[in-house]
Amino acid sequence: MSEASQNRPDQPGNTGTGKGTLARDVALYSLARLALVLVLAVVILYVPRLFGVEIPLLVAALFAVLIALPLSLVVFAPLRRRVNESIASVDARRRADRADLQARLRGEDRR
Image (tube, rainbow, N blue to C red):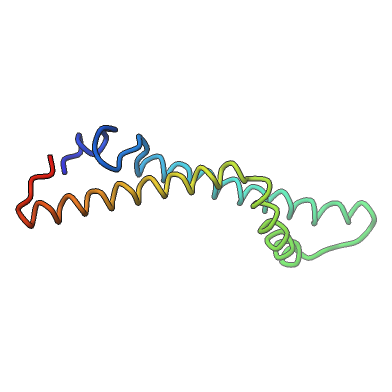
């Protein structure tokens, strides 16, 4: 299938989103999760210093990752849903393209 026909929403399996949208959504979700880890690490490092307690960087980073894992599922739920929808769209298009290719290989005309 040509590049032009892959972006047409009237093709079977196309819902208007593509691999570029999926890549953007995954990158945005990943950056948001990393930012959350960084913010939590800074909070874990510096808030105890107000009370005279030193926490090692590695310990703060580990706790930040552990806290960010479940927290990001709740805080970034809309982003996660968008990523899941993009994955479903790309998968549906891939299935339709594969079925079309198999039909053409069998000699059927699916148009």
